[in-house]
Length: 262
Image (cartoon, rainbow, N blue to C red):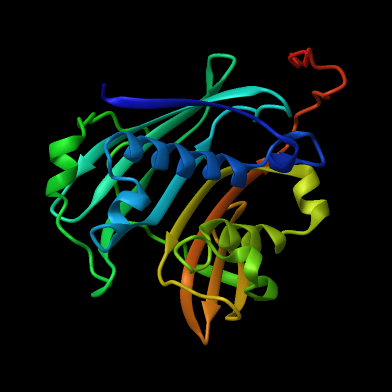
């Protein structure tokens, strides 16, 4: 089997309170969960690697939203597969569907890191245990490129707290994306929706670290950069592209299929 598929249900914590639809950030969390489950089937989950003093990291995420996101309580299907393996890099591609239609697609770049040296280790074990499916959802895997900023839009400070920390004892990827999302004013988000997001994770941060997120406009229409820094050094770079939200569908009018509870 070249692809791993997992079904999820959109829960309250994962929906946009303005429209009751899945938040884009939550789509990324489903992808990370599906990757973890997929690696577990090959005995290469995080807890498997701990035994060899290694761990997974993701350094890039690219995702395009091509249709309306599902409402609360909808069932979605995540398909993820290993699409390319080099000496040190592992690429995954993925699609997310609901009602049989793809609403998001993209790719991610992963490494296995040695806990002591903090350096990537060779990917021989990946080629041994995974089938490679060279289906590329966004075309060729390209090196991340952050658009040039033109003017600062907003700035936000954040001190890492316990809710930001994951099982590796460093800040969860979700916290960086949340921080970038928080810099967009609510009125902006009410009239627009996310078309694409590209993320590069540069460095780990930890409990009590002070982060500063600077969101800037670019010369590309409706595209923004979000640079998150610690002590003046970028720990995460994000670019987002938005489009006007013409979605007039309401969850009240939508024929929502909520399963009966016994």
